[in-house]
Length: 78
Length: 254
Image (cartoon, rainbow over all chains, first blue to last red):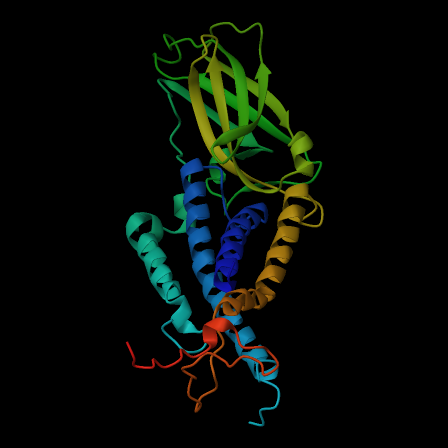
């Protein structure tokens, strides 16, 4: 599983958890089924996109950082 | 591979495509009205009494009319271990000076709390000796019961009056905020907060998964060096295999 996929998965969970937590803290009403499903689906999609991009960026940064430290072959002097 | 560097944008070209695709789904699959309507208006419940049919009824929550709590943002409040008094009052309309008004036999006052469209709990006050009348009242002391250890937040409640034949002659929805100790002292918000922390930790350490995709890619030489077109030579100590021995030139005689 790549960093992007991991970010998407975490973002979907975070979106759903965020909606449920917002309801528990009184900012949102989830008593109507259709409206609650709309909130959950939109939050899951937005969270998936957002954290997918974040995961992709973090993956690139991780690769760039480790390529500069350990990716250099031994003996090269550049 | 579209790009020379492993794990770069070229190897994950599907990422922006997937993002654009999901964004298109959000923008076009959902109705525009649901995106444009504000939250408070969307959760506002109907104030019209249901199935009034010549019946006037109202209910009060600790003395205040439940019509004062039409949305999640303007909800009544009940504290942890709190009890609210819900008072139902109904009367029959019609007739002349109260004479000739239709009679109702209402024997049940009901209060339901809803979550995801389903009734979490139902409380009834039943008058077993109900008789046809032109007015009546019910008093109910309501608490969340064991749910206060599990849930908190804003919930829709429906107060209703039910006749002896089982029909709902009046109903009214309103919103109540159920509080918990220290704001998050119930089971569900605690679990959700722990899950939130765990997922945020996963996102923070998500970069290491990039090495999984990068390890599959072949190593590329640094810039400025040409890629050798021949396979690496065998070690010198290795004995030549018979397949690598050159073919002896033909002698030409036949």
